[in-house]
Image (cartoon, rainbow, N blue to C red; front, side):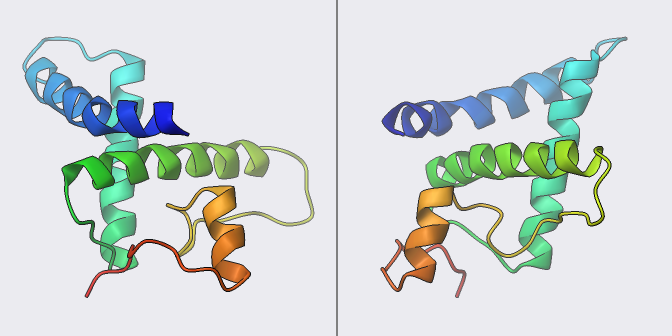
Length: 113
């Protein structure tokens, strides 16, 4: 978990800067398009769920968690199931954070004011 936190501090801003810089290039790779799409998806999710973060480091960390959860939802929904999954207000929480919040333990302040 500490590794994700350390990576999250700089990983997302670096990717965003790379995407902006590469958008002027003639070709954007599928991987870059996918990351750009996920960044936009996270931004839309933040607006829909009225989510804001204390700083860019927290936003980067939450983006990585959101991305992992969104990829799980997308992968599951490609399967043959009698139901589908979706993103919700908890989509930027890890499994441990979600469980802790449902058990009545306090989380760090993730909600926007």
